[in-house]
Image 1 (cartoon, rainbow, N blue to C red):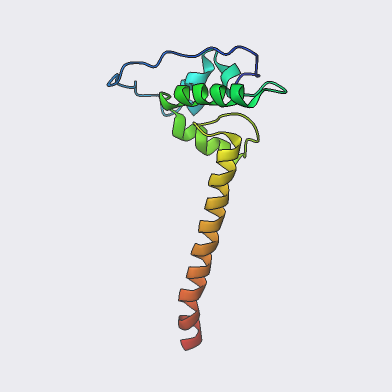
Image 2: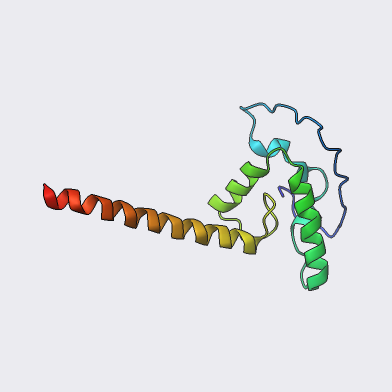
Length: 126
């Protein structure tokens, strides 16, 4: 998803199972190994006024590309941290990323609340 969107709806062939993923250089940016850098950017971003059926089909094809990407987790985290408002990143659509972010916020609030509750009796006893 590092290229501007275009109208091509190419679908990449999925490699056979068990093909080892090459170790990547830890000093190189994660996106240098992204499968989406190979002429498939049109799969990851919606053209204007895209019909629902076409969008769902395109997103499914994009997710299949992501599923074979060696940097899918890094890409997903990038999209969640930024946050990226459009496109498929790390195998998640923008709507799916909003759900993940909402769940993380809820979890963080619950953890903070639990930490405060656990700390309260200690502070009152001191």
